[in-house]
Figure 1 (cartoon, rainbow, N blue to C red):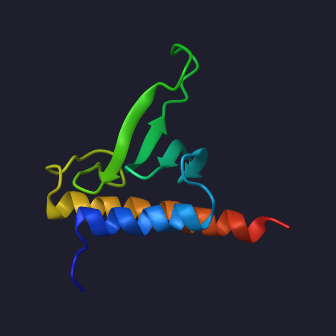
Figure 2 (cartoon, helix red, strand yellow):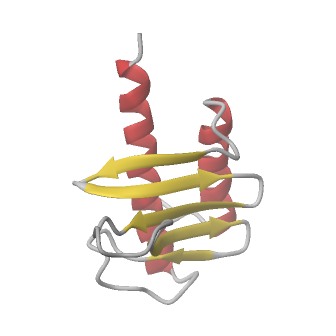
Length: 114
């Protein structure tokens, strides 16, 4: 199977958020015991890891783990320990894994609603 380009992957995730009425909304999700802030709009999808240490200043201290747009792709790996070259095939592969995990979690949450 051919790897998607950044634009294709972004359009896929944008359609998923649009289909659910979640465009331009900030969501808080828990993936593998970690808390993330996720947002998708017409320009970009971003996934931000929230650092939940109580001694940090207020706000949303943390770091970007995935940012995807029509012509950009930045992504850490799933363990958040490696950062492939932006827009490289490895970054796209990692971004696709993040997108898949987020969409699966959204599907799971939708299945639990009455």
